Amino acid sequence: MGANGQSSNGSTIIPCLRYRDALAAIDWLQRAFGFHPQAVYADGDTVHHAQLVFGQGMIMLGSASNSGEWAKLAVMPDEVGGRQTQSACVIVTDADAHYARAKAAGARIVIDIADQAYGGRGYACADPEGYLWWFGSYDPWRAEHTQ
Image (cartoon, rainbow, N blue to C red; front, top):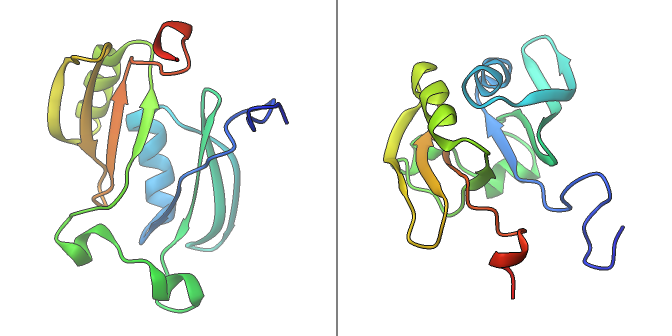
């Protein structure tokens, strides 16, 4: 691990999501967004843990459950009117191509693609279970964006 806390293989901050149909979500996230499964631990229709990668980033996901400690702390987007307190931001090299791919796969666009005042180009969409995602070309790791 480097001095800034970043792993030599990727980010040390990994968003974690729960899906009612985690197997379908894994398939959709690959088709729509370009994620690749690194590991999927499933038993029938239940995904106990999955790791999907995109560039140097990763998300973890599993099947939603109504039992257990985590289930007491988390809700699904449709249980709170689709509102969320957090979302994932994914850096892409070609925001327009990614937008077209996601839209073709049925992503619900919630903020249309546009140039951003702070730099880059991006858009926001929701996946089939209502999670919000931001995809854009703005890269805060580039030298001209850091202070």
